[in-house]
Image 1 (cartoon, helix red, strand yellow):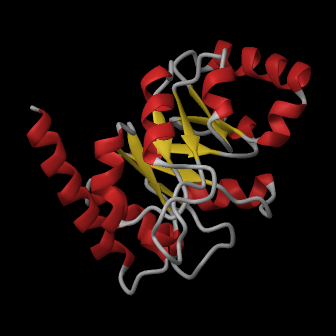
Image 2 (cartoon, rainbow, N blue to C red):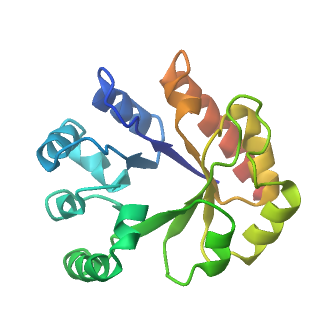
Image 3 (cartoon, rainbow, N blue to C red):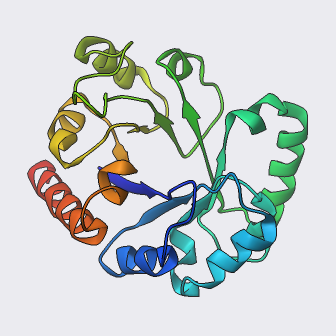
Length: 209
């Protein structure tokens, strides 16, 4: 499965250094989501991370920064999708400059999977798990998830309430990956937690092979 870590919405102490350590320990994809950052502030954040790791970063805003930094891709939020005409033009211009730029989005419910007609590299789906109980969030169950994932025309990544404890069920349901937020950042040692996640995920990969 693809393992993605998404940034805290508000920057924490030494965050860029922690993210760099994530990359050094094997993280292949990081989503930079900073709704309160200006373009200048996000550029300064990116400059704190070694340039050779920039191609593992997807940004949720200030997409024009892909012209300055060799980033992995951009993520389209609900705000972008509501401005369909404007967003489509910007995407075309960005793809001319960066033809290999990946484009991803998020679905808030299973209907998004069935209605999707755009070719995204992958899509995040959630909230899947209730962070308090660990059970499925309202609107999801094993049967409906398995059916929807089987019909998806893009890889679907589980988001929301994901943790080391529910990696097994995500693997069994057929998710193409998992997004980690509080399941990493709100643990005692985020780097150690990520190392455990990557190790467990490598075991799934070995079983598939």
